[in-house]
Image (cartoon, rainbow, N blue to C red; front, side, top):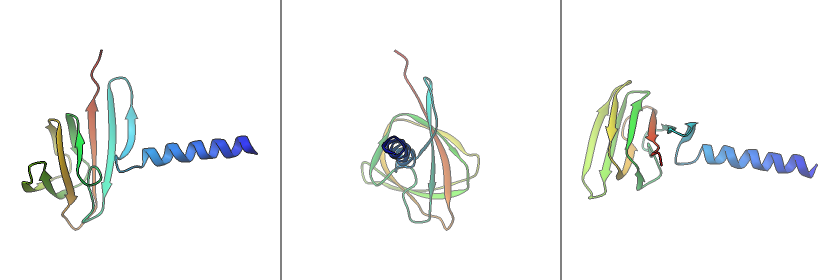
Length: 114
């Protein structure tokens, strides 16, 4: 019984980590880590509050209107379309779903070798 409880707790902890504010990890290997983020209107898009990312590729899985607040405090609103794909350098920001529908995206971090 204790072994079953331990396995359940271990599985639950892994599930919570995979579903954290850092997104759901959908692929993690020696080359890349891919996160999937889903956001409701008015909620954080790609991390909780002010957060940072290393350089990454973003692929939009839905249309979206997002409001980005940069680390310098500049506020930018962007209209993105399903399939939009773009590269971003390392950055610190706040990103909020400014639209009326759910937002879904994948963020790909390339791992450095050596």
